[in-house]
Image: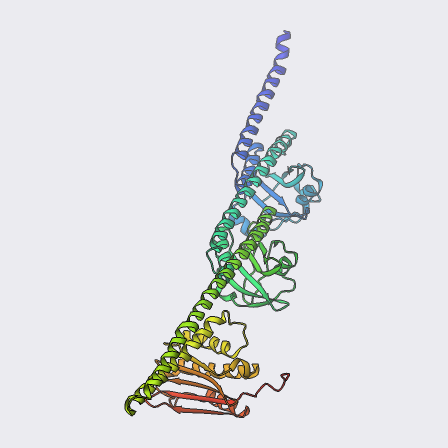
Length: 554
């Protein structure tokens, strides 16, 4: 019967339709699996797993093409156990047959993998693979990577298999693009949060702490392993001022040549610069992975370079990371300018307050004390000798108080003394610097026109002698009071340091005292070291004020 003759064809057509419907269902299921996640690492692995399930492959991998377009920067594999992977060693980099899929940008399907001349370079312990299917994955107009599928001793891949994997690869490209956009959004969110956090913290910091604040907050907010801040040191070196991360103490304070470093490139271009691998910059330091150097400027002044690094083999910093790092550097520069302006305003306000206090002391307190001293002297002339002597003692005390107040007035009116070359400023700097290591702050008194008659070379000598004296007091004297007097009289500059400590013990090395004596002799002066009545030590160092004035114009 005619109907009976058509039965096999109808059955075959029905089976083919069912098979096509089943494979379409498998493709839709695989597509759903791929697109339902946004984390890129998970998406890449799911693409491989979905493709293997779709065509019943035994092994699968996805190679991400490197920036050079000729090799693989990452290789995600499924189906090979960890022990075998360890025996194989390094993962493929895109040579041989894998490289052919990269260069041809088209599917490659082989029935017998070993028979193809491009299938070379398989290492020992590699699993046996018979049939092969390689399909490029495009993201937009570019090939992002390639999908590799193989079987062992099973049937070869078919035209239908290839069509299904090509269709899945198209969907995979969309999923990868979405995941990349999601990663970019997360990176921007992290950088934005870091920027806001750093800016807020910087506005609370003092000027010298700004770079510390930047390093601390960036290291805490962004997924990095190590954070350095390096500042220019001289003309061709960089000095590490701040480090956050493992082994930070080993690098702090080290100085490295700037030439050829990522940091110097960032400073030269004033843009964030990156590398995928950063050699260890310091002696004994391990190599680092992906690294970004972010230049920090205040206007046109280079403040330093913020360098953030990840562990080796970590994901590289993306173009979006570099854009956000550049934006961060710009905002950090503005914040640094704000901090500096605030510090300048604070110093200006402080200088005004100090000047006002100095004026009040000079115009009111000293004048009243001076008047009181004159009145006491007038009274002393009208009383008996004992009372007169007592009054004169109080007059001397008033004179000493006036000298102390004048020293305070000078200190208040000097403002920032750090760059000053004047003798009074230099001596005050030495006292301020060394008083932190002493139980009591030394008192210093000046007398005479020191700033007018003492030269810069003699000021250097005086500073060195005072530093030696106060260092000895801090280390050995155990003093409760320390008095410093600097005066000029009849062309002789005299520096006297008194303390009420336990004196100079026989065990104390006398090299420093000998140096002071030798300094005075070479300058035509004297150095006297003696015990004070009641305990303690007095050092008197006196030299002619003419030293160092020979080069001055008359």
